[in-house]
Length: 77
Image (tube, rainbow, N blue to C red; front, side, top):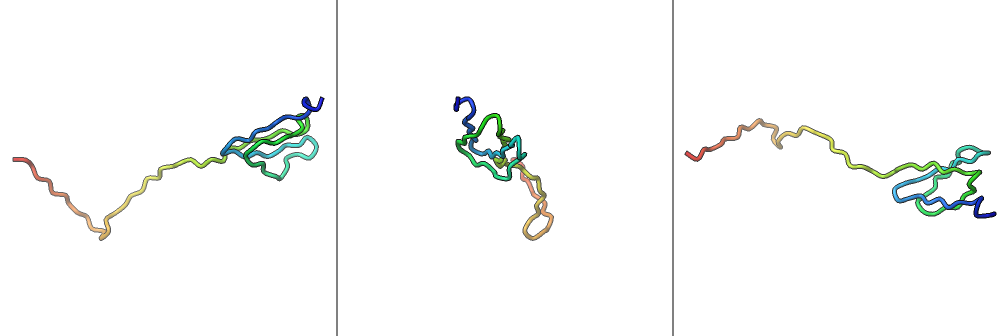
C-alpha cells in the first residue's frame, strides 16, 4: 500500500526540479540532483535543464597599432 503512494524521483546531473503540490501550487524550494521521495498523487516534479551550452560569438578584431597592412606575396618564378 505504501509503495503505491510513494514514488522515487531521480533528478539527473545538470537538471533541477521544482515541485507542484495539488493543494499549495508550486513550491519555492529548488530540488537539486539526486534521489527524492514524493507522494505520487500529491506532488509532481517539474524538471528543468540548467546545463550551460557553448556559444560562438563572431567579432571583428584589429591589429595592435590599428594600421591597415598589406601583405606582400612572392611567387616562385
